[in-house]
Image 1: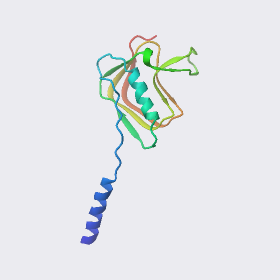
Image 2: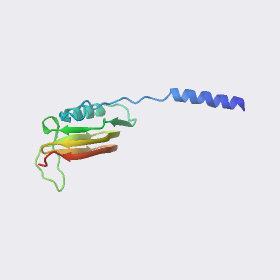
Image 3: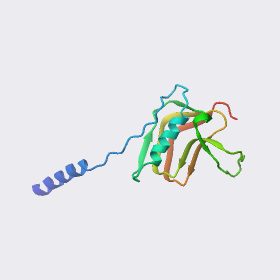
Image 4: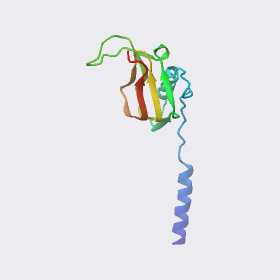
Length: 140
């Protein structure tokens, strides 16, 4: 009996050491500064698209207000039903060709300026967006 407990204990220690550490992805802009966060979103999503593994990753964005402006945002041609068809469109987060990703805003407020689409998800699998609000400074 003591031998079985010992083997179980050793197995738990070995398995704990085998866990893989997820890479950390940072948003790259400080909250509550009114600094343009669009470029940081472009960079972050580029890093996520470059991942070679399919392990689930959670990106935690520190709580606060983030302002997104169209100048450095994604530029895409989307044809959206029940929507105007002016192209190209400016997009805050163009989540394309991603899988197993969670973006956790931790209670943040994402404020978009001008004529923008806050989020677009295309060709994705297991994408979760949570814990943030979306608003517009002045709706276009």
